[in-house]
Length: 284
Image (cartoon, rainbow, N blue to C red; front, side, top):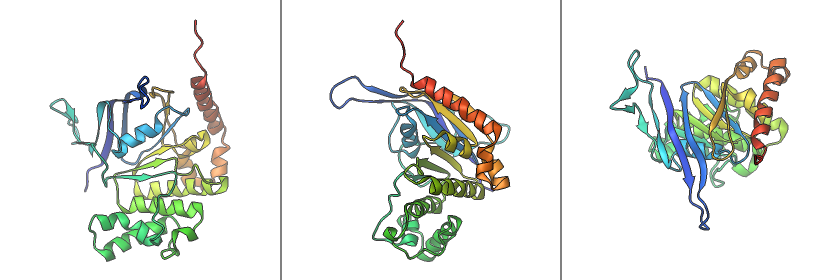
């Protein structure tokens, strides 16, 4: 049986140089975070808090100015996960197939049909054609597109295109799925449908997922753990263990879950934290 994976972020800071010669921009400062197998971690915070920077670090698109990230096995039971002062795991130094990314815009290839788009990553990895098409078909069925294998991208609605992007990321069988506001450009009804679809995919695959959103309601509904980040420089200031997603998976009634008194209470609490963070500091 494969060991469970864990992604760890160790005292990470990111500073961007100003291209116009101004002061460097401190995007993240002293971020520590662990994501374990089967967790759906959602990041929330005011604009400019570094959510996307954090995801780009996990994806390997950028490197930290300080600290490091690892993705590896969760270790041997009963033994510490540290060797020679360094945590067990492979350091993230660039993009890799073990980290799947779903963007806000679908980033599909218009000259390929749905199943070819879905299987494209496996083709790059040299997987034999029948195997990659079988695997792609499995995940297209999971996202409700089993009857659309040979449609072109332009024949699909925005929500269906995003489903293809999710299926493509899952087909590569990554250890963690990174979702950068994947539902932000969709209408309200389609967005709710895809929230439910993502939770079904999470339950079916037991993947680690890291999800960015600007919607407090979406964050609470999706997250098994919610992290709230401060404005620049971004830091994790609050962390909440939540079970609203599992309540939905048990009852299949999203509106009932979002109407629960403790959901509403938590929504107001998180909104208060974010609004407080957005207030400008007043000089003494």
